[in-house]
Length: 223
Image 1: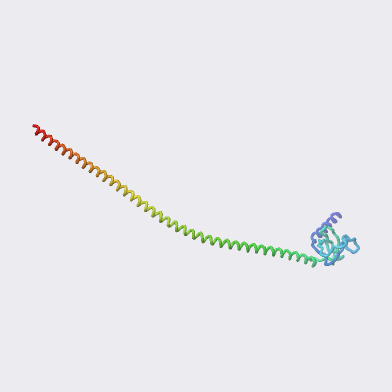
Image 2: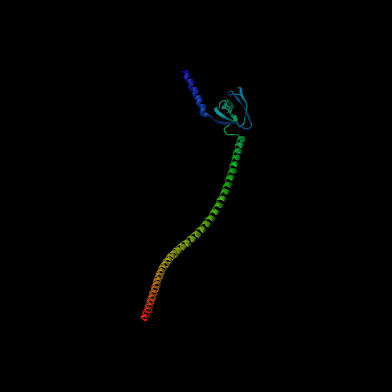
């Protein structure tokens, strides 16, 4: 029963220490000894913890005015309450402020660099937009010229079609005239042939008649 009570007290003590843990700091410009107990007579575990050192607060005893703390390295001991504060000292706050200021300056420089880059990109974009606008204008002009050429080409094609149709009609007319001319030539040749043949026949008949007459005259003379 007694052992259970002791274990309960120990667990309660540990639980209280764990639930009580918070961060405290050594006050300005001090080197505070860390002792093994809650009095100035106890053995010194650390000769002088400098001011601004961050410690983990484990327990506070208002009666003895000592607090149990743990260092970052894991060393535990007791320090007088008067040397502990719950906010960082001015030196630490100044260092933190300077670090934050340096970070802000770096961020500001990065933002300025980003703004400069964005301005350059905006200038490039503006230049590209101007070039695109000019190219668009040129394309519109070329398109208008192409449309005009296409319209002229359509007119030329239509005119060519008309000329081809007229040429075909002319060829047909020429062929018809050639046929008629051939027919006329054939007809004229036939006329000349008939005329020549008639003339020859008439000449033959005339010669025959004359020859017969001469023969008859000679025959009558002979008789």
